[in-house]
Image (cartoon, rainbow, N blue to C red; front, side):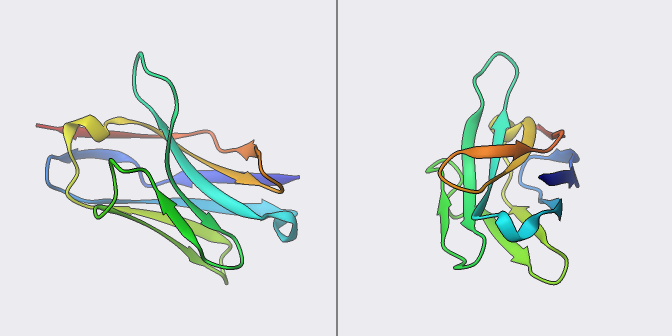
Length: 117
């Protein structure tokens, strides 16, 4: 099993930046990829960004391309989401998740990001 713990959320003004962290523990050798998702009040959870664990290939939702960057610290088994030029519509609970195959099967508890206008 893989355990994921997110941190780094908070309140920021529009145009500001935040960096979220997702620390992985347990059977990290089984991880194929890690993704960030978010869920705003009254909306469905949506994909934000993903990174293959070993190859480093990344993917982004169109809504965050050019503003968000996903990266990984191999020594710490931690994945980051650097969020710049934040907008009020980025307000959501952000979750990290890991997958061993195609489906994400381990999830963190979530961290709240609030962007004020």
